[in-house]
Image (cartoon, rainbow, N blue to C red; front, side, top):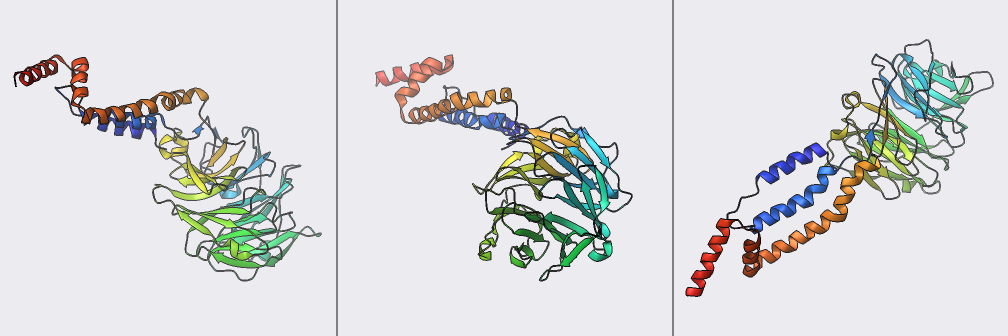
Length: 423
């Protein structure tokens, strides 16, 4: 899809090149008209979704890093610099609860327990916080020393919620869970690399999780907490999403317009070798991926934009074009996360703290495009046939000049006929 404004510029250029004619419509004119008609849908083309009225969390730049949403789609947590935390009603983000933690660490990732009542939030210096939905409380969930005071960059609960996996900026991964003494049981995984862990996500049904590292590539954690690298080395991965229990696939993205499909099979790790595709024609970088609805995911890009990736079709579609971002608070900022509230609707979060809804255009906005589909395409097809007939039939050219030509063209045609009769 292309923005209306960019295609309007193209049409103006095309129309200015159409040659004038003194003897009626020439083939080049008809071809030009046909091209204009065939290109006309692009004038009305727009992104699959459009932005609505946003909500600002603060007058200041909050430096947000992301958002986590519970499995039921009821609560969203936004997190970021200076230990900023806020809980939002996922359906109506204007309903908010500020979560206070007396620290200044940057909070880098979060994930809800599968049961949806608690969440882990991780950040700099080995900080692991636990959020409880019941009383909107925040407390420390593990001692920083047990996580080597590392900067924790990724967290994900495994299927069933028995353990959470936590990754660091130096390549470590731990599994941890709360113990009976109010602390945490922590174990390090073996066989890891040394580059930052960029993302972790666990499949909702299979006891397997997928890990993305900045240099070593894609790895898989099985039900026994055994870690195995499966491929994708050298790509700058930025996100992973296992959106639904209805498919075995997870999707990973890398910032240089890479999308990888990863099939999970507990009995055959070779199936998890990433199937990688690159989209060289997209003028943006892929900075993250989130679940939307079913097996559909949303890839977040910079400059600000959204791309849908459909797992069942293994295909990607433009959703929100950069040229169609009409909210200056979004276009001049960085999208750090999204969450869906339906098949095609949801909310996006920016680094500065804007929460902005997206949804398909209103039905009235589609009327012109629908009319084009019904009328314009047959008309364009007819013009193509007319062009062919015109180019090969002198009789048809004469007839069209008599009917539609200007006075000078008609006089020239009459003179030509008299010359032929004299011969």
